[in-house]
Image (cartoon, each protein chain N blue to C red):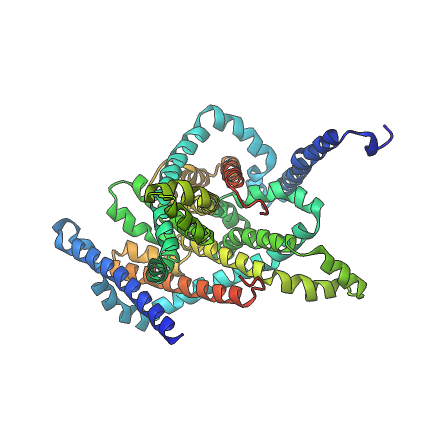
Length: 256
Length: 270
């Protein structure tokens, strides 16, 4: 057991070291070629040097919190609308047949193409960004919820009804526990898409957030800050994805 | 007509098929179009928003024939389609071998896990400033962004597919004297084709999300550019027309890959 954990940590370190080595090598290549020397700040050394300043000034924290709150509200809205839609799709055959084509169509409208419309329709850019995140994140949650419900044994509902369960009891005691796993799987997918959408959504109109920081450091030719921001985006995404994954494992009742 | 009992079963099936594939989708789509028309009418009614009336259904429908006949839509579809196709092909060509390596070897899986998850969770568009410097052309930068976004679902779906393969099959084929290539073409690929296509479907969805913002900067062709162009010229009818084009095109591509997923499914209970 302990041996397995040590091996696990060892392999992770090896993997991360390889990634770091490749980054270092790339930086060295940039630095040694006179044509690309101007971009040498992308390398790990200058990036590391930029970290104290960016964190000391609170730039990274502020950007992360701003983006995080947009992401949080957007995901929350997607969950609050996506789960009921998914339950409707899973429980009502007619609703599923009616909604399938329009929903598939809306799902495949690339979220950023709503941006001009969202900016005009909503009073602030902040709300427009949150709308774009929700629009991207709602579909994986709705479809995962519906797929989870489709796997439920209809006999459970009969049993519950025979035992005198109310509609609310059925929801609380049967539906939600049974589909928690699928809903969380959907939320994990939604988080992935939302994380893709938030950066370009923050490129325009506003002056806060991780996407803006990327844009800003590019315009200032501050490549070290750019590399730090990319790293921060990767690490935050990695942590959020890890939390979702742990929650999925926790609520899984399919013991594989 | 005395009732359904006298109808023959194939006819019943056909009417059911018509209901499921024609009637219900049409009604559903009709509702969506109705909501759009209502929204446009509301915009037109209020004097504050009457500038935006062109977002409505009728102005958009009126704009479509002109956009088609002038070749505007076709031109931007080709530009985007080319980038999407090359980006996805590269993602598949690189992703499938990586997925096989992860699925077959526990050590590769453990070494690659953290670095790959970290790279996967770097929002693709944040690479944009770097790739613009690295690649001589914007076209290549966009293709790179699509590949970098689309590769991960292919990698992980391939790896997950391989894990479900019964290890006994490898033994059997080895005992029957199969070479590594035969193992690949006769056992591995048929077994994981379903998973690869599932991964490609997810990849397509993500590539489609990335394509539009990637085309908002630098280039003057493609669906993303068409959206930006319509906004800057305040041609709102053109804008909604392009949104609809993006939705329909995405829908068609997704349905096509979904069909491939079904076609290569050998797990009949799915």
